Length: 381
Ligand code: NAD
Ligand code: MG
Image 1 (cartoon, protein in one colour):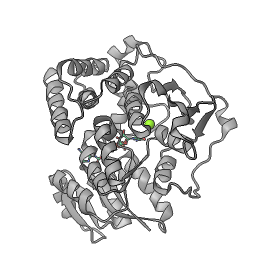
Image 2 (cartoon, helix red, strand yellow; image 1 turned 120 degrees about the vertical axis):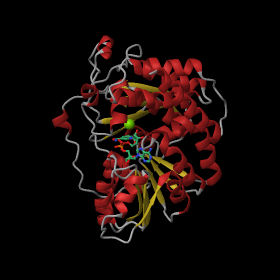
Image 3 (cartoon, helix red, strand yellow; image 1 turned 45 degrees about the vertical axis):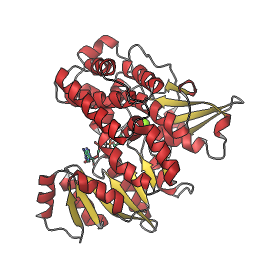
Image 4 (spheres, protein in one colour; image 1 turned 180 degrees about the horizontal axis):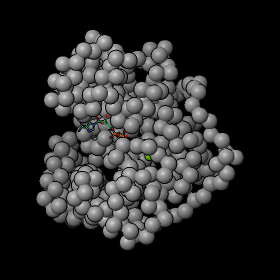
């Protein structure tokens, strides 16, 4: 029996993780859950999974939850400190990293320092601190198994292969809701249009990132750290059907791909059960029904965020941290109707040009850089 701690259990990945775990009660047991503030969803999860402990980041929401009558003897903690404490002291085998954004970094590092398996959806952790996390994983024999569907696909294609024989990896991208729009459309794109993803149902932040293709940019950096590959060996190709989740091309020219429906349950399950594959009843891919696959080059002039991500990966140091923090603020402002969609790359560029890059940053430098960037971009808006 593996004990599972889900960080961000009330989000899109968190809920899907519990949908997977529900099917394997004899293999996986939930020992901890966390949320920012969505206590109604958390209450249902507590009553079903009876975790030893939950952490609600928001103090007021935690108090509200404490006042409710729960059908479980679950300890309720609150605040950032206790989130870290739980990651560093709760008895678990696998951490599911399903928090969104920079907030996932600190608790994930705690799990790394304890040499745990981390089923990682929170790509921002590797974007802002990939170098540090990679070093710590080696030092503590921690294991990161990607949940992001593209990286899970690559991970699966690499089983039984030598990394030294990889010519390149090919990350597929749906292209998002604005694939067929002109760049000028970004001046007037609405929140509703940007949230209307053609293939995937996800949290708001990643959905906006998909519309700007920043999501693919973050994934390029995520792949760089997960698989230790340089920029030249990481390609992006648009594949609007989102059935091929990604591919690996080897030095003999052979390409391996992993296919499946656009449903995160499969990569989540794989990250929990690897190296085993578990029988499940999830819907199967009906290829004749899908009919055809198409592929295009991404337009780097239109999707500036994707280009910026490649650039900061090359710069290294805290440049990816600046890009990420600026993007988090810009996306938040866009979702609040404070800026245009076209201003997202503009603000990121401003931050990258203004703020100093620090090489081989430790955790303190990364936290400072994140804060400085947030303050800088917020002041611009
Ligand atoms: P979401 O917004 O649906 O859920 C985020 C979760 O984190 C929620 O439980 C929320 O309560 C919690 N949270 C948010 N901010 C917090 C904070 N400051 N402190 C503590 N907890 C906080 O997001 P999601 O779509 O599930 O995405 C989660 C992560 O997985 C992201 O990094 C995303 O890029 C990645 N991811 C998601 C998908 C997907 O299909 N949704 C696919 C691949 C990767
Ligand atoms: Mg992805």
